[in-house]
Structure formats: C-alpha cells, structure tokens
Amino acid sequence: MDFRDIEYFAVLAEHGHVGRAAETLGLSQPALSLSLRRLEQAVSARLFKRTAKGIELTDAGSTLLSQVQRLRLARDDVLREVADLSRGHTGTLRIGAHPGVIENLLGPTCSAMLNSAPNVALTVIVEANDEAVIALREGRMDLIVSIIPPAPYLDVTQEHLMDDTMVVFAAASHRLAKKKLVTMDDLEDERWTATAFSAHTWPLYKLAFQNSGKKTPRIVVQTTSLSFRDQLVASTDLLGTSSKRLLQQIKTRHDVVELPVKEFKVNRGVGVFQRKDAYLSPVARRFIELLRATAQQLSSAP
Image (cartoon, rainbow, N blue to C red; front, side, top):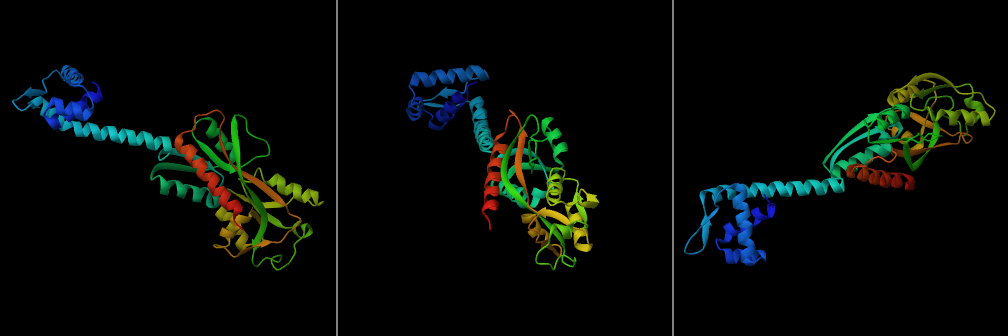
C-alpha cells in the first residue's frame, strides 16, 4: 500500500468528484483513477460508488477514511521524531564525569540541554578516568567529560575544552590563612587530603614540590567524595587542592580560603572523550556543542 494513494483517496473523499480532486492534486484524471484502483486492490474492497453528482464513499471507504487522520498524525509524529533526532532534540545520552567538572562545566551544559530539548534523557555517572574509559570502550558510556591525562588513552579521542588553574585551600581559621604570601616551605610539613579522582593531577602537585626542592605532600585522608574533602578541610588543619573556579562554589558552603602560594603553579586540561571512530548520535553531537559553548564562557569569565 502506497501512502500517496491514501492521501489521494482522502482528497477524493473531500471533493466527491474525480475531476476536482485531480485538479487539486495536480494529477490527470486517469492517474488519479489508477491510484484509486491500486488502493482498492490493496484493501480488497470498493471505496467509492458513483452518483449523479460524482462519487461517494462506500461503507468500506468510510471506515478507511476514519483511519486516515490517525495515519497522517502517525506520519507527522514519525517525521518530527526523525527531525528531532537529527537535530539532537531527543534521545538518550550516557556520560561519565570527573567530580571536579560537575558544578562548573557539566551542570550548566546539562541544564542547557534539558531546557532546549526536554525529550532528551541523560545518565551521568561520576567515575575515575580509568573506570570511565573502560565503560566507554565497552559501549556502556557515550561520552566522558573529565581531566585530560598526561598520556592519551588508546582507541579514545579527546578534545580539549578548557584549562583549570589549581590552587591550595584551607580553613579560614588555619594558621596559614592570614599570611599575605605562603611559600612552599610553609606547605612542606602540612597534612593534606585528596580525592581518589586526582590520580592524573597529583603527579603535577608532586612535581611542583620537587621543583622547589621540597618533599612530597603527606596525604592523610583520601576519599571519593569532594563534599567530604571540603568538609574536612573546613573543620581541620588539613590542606586541599581544587580548581580556582570550583573553590568559589566551595566557599559558598564552607568557611575556607585560597592560600596565596605563588610557587604553586599547576594547570590541568579538561576535555570530552569519545571512542575513536565510533558513531556519535545527534544528541551526543549537540551535547558536545553545548559543552564547547559553556567552556568558552567559563574561560572568558574574569
């Protein structure tokens, strides 16, 4: 059954006259009659009967016409869905994320995605890079938004989005918090807390200490929770590290301050990862576009 024949049938039913229907459709009368015969053969029933004024529907024709609007709506729904899919307005997306990018980069991007495309469904899983990359390779994740490692992963492409400046922070009551300038000497014997997600960043911290001739920082608490790390720093004499952007948000929840350590110069790249040569769905492509826009806004902010 050709859908065009059904459309022609509906126009015939509307006009009740082969000549007027053919003129409306821009067809010859023989072509329209041929279309009607094809449709009648497909449904094994006569759809019209001739009258003095033209044609009128048979019972079978009336039954078919009652379903045509449903068919048209179904067609329109399919076309809209395909168009939405092609524009990234619907679909599902599974994202692996480093906790350090959740609030600044990923949160605003997800909000923009959901506000502009309410039919999109997102799953965001916070994991360390190595575990997330395994899930990406196995097809359990579509994208990863995380810290770019020193050495790229095999079979994974990574696009740099922005840079994070890392800083040292402490409780506002910490003995170093009142100093106008904190040196690496001041930090050498301090106790630190770190997250299990900083595997690719801690070597940079260690290098900063080594370049200053200092011993490696002493980590006494390691956790997978950024909020727990922040709480510990705020309530003890432990030091922590954070991106400068994220620290601004930590300050809204805890009484902490950035320590002015000029010798501590550590930057890390943030990027989006995907499987090399893998199919990237329209919703994933749209999400990456929004990631780029969000990262650009963050990078240009004072």
